[in-house]
Image 1 (cartoon, rainbow, N blue to C red):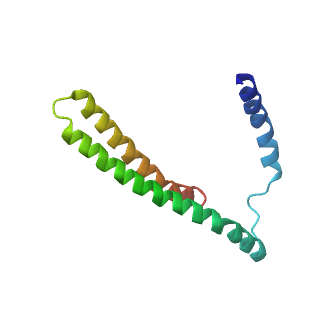
Image 2: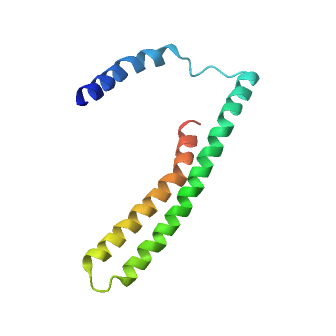
Length: 109
């Protein structure tokens, strides 16, 4: 299995530059191409937005659960640490989910 992964990685590193060299990214899209692109992108964005909002709701619920766990931990240091780590992970995850589109938009504009 490891050999297959290495083979895929090496082939990717060798083939991707040659494929990208053939593409002209500075070429402007025609209005028809832009319309086709928007038609393809619309359902993808619907799925992305659904996942983003579902993950946000789950994140808030996990944050509440982490808070309840922290409050009810009493003197147990292990439970408090797990609750803190859970809360930090949820906050970082939510930040990544909500900032990723802004980063992509910034990079491609």
